[in-house]
Image 1 (cartoon, helix red, strand yellow):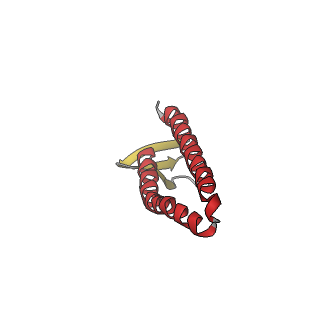
Image 2 (cartoon, rainbow, N blue to C red):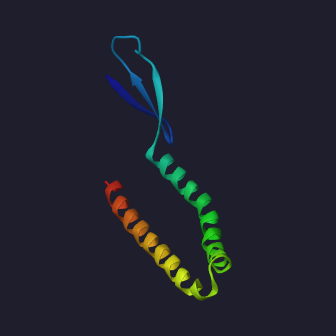
Image 3 (cartoon, one colour):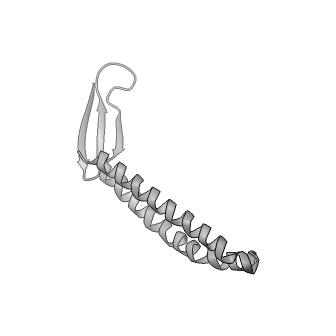
Length: 101
């Protein structure tokens, strides 16, 4: 049998009771709030390099691509960026609705 006790905000202790070698052993589990905070911190940390990359790629395109093709390659780049943004928005909406209980 397993008992769950909340010891501090953000952590839970799981106590296993019964017979066997693992009787009375305590395990810590991260709560959902801690995991959400971790996701937010990772997102903020990744935001800055992504924004820098977004502004560097057009200048790299203008250096690497022949002058007549720069507008075409920039258009393709921005279509890809918009597509990824729409996909991420739909992805976040789909999973934000399933987590609410």
